[in-house]
Length: 265
Image (cartoon, rainbow, N blue to C red; front, side, top):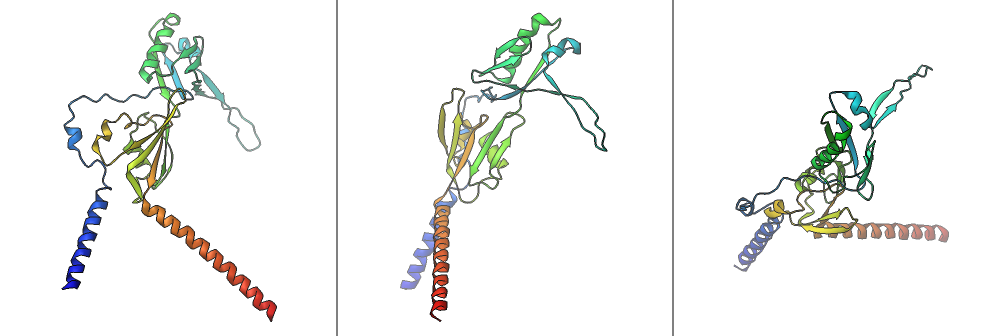
C-alpha cells in the first residue's frame, strides 16, 4: 500500500514538473491580449543613424543632368594569359553618415540625414536638388549595412544583414535557427545603442503575446539579441568542467605513479 502511495506521489510530481516546464517553452501564450488591443499599431520605418552606409541614387529623364549627383567608382578588371586589360565598370559609392548624422553630398555639400526615415531623407534630397534640375528627380535612399546580431542559446549565432531594413525579434531568432532547448524564453536581452551613443539593455519576455506591442519588437540596425541559458545548461557546463579537471588530475597522477615505479625498478 505504501509503495502504491509513493508511486502515485512521484508520478504526480513528475507530471506537474513537466507541465511547469512546458509553460516556459512556447512563444506568445496569450494571443487574446493582442487581439483585444483596440489601438492601431503604426508601421515600422527605420531611421538613419551615425555610421550607417547609404546608397543614394538620383534619376531624371536626362541621365547626364543627374550624373553630377551620383557618386560612382570605376573598377578595373585584370585578365590573365599575361595580358593586362582594363574593363571599366561603374559602381555606386556609399555615403558614410558621420557622428553628427551628416553626409557629404555632391554639389549640395553636407546634408543632415541622421534621425530621418528613408522616405524623409529622399524628400529632403529631392527638395535640395530642385534649383539644379529642370524636373523633379526620383531619389532613392537605401541602407547598405543594416545588420543585427543574435548570440547565446540559438542554433546558429551570428551577425545577419537585413536587406529590407525591417526585422522583428522573432524573425531575428528564425535567422539564427531559433532558440535551443536551453534558451530562456522569458529573459531575452536586447542590447541597443542610440544615435547619441547611449546604451541600454532591455529584458524581453517572449512567452507573452504583448511583445508584438512593445517598442522593442522591431530591431534597429546594430541591435544585439542575447538568449540566456537556463540552469540546466549552466549545471551541465559545470559538470563538464569539473569532469575535465578530474580527468586531467587523474592522468597526471597516473603519469607520476608510472614514473616513480620506473625509477624504483
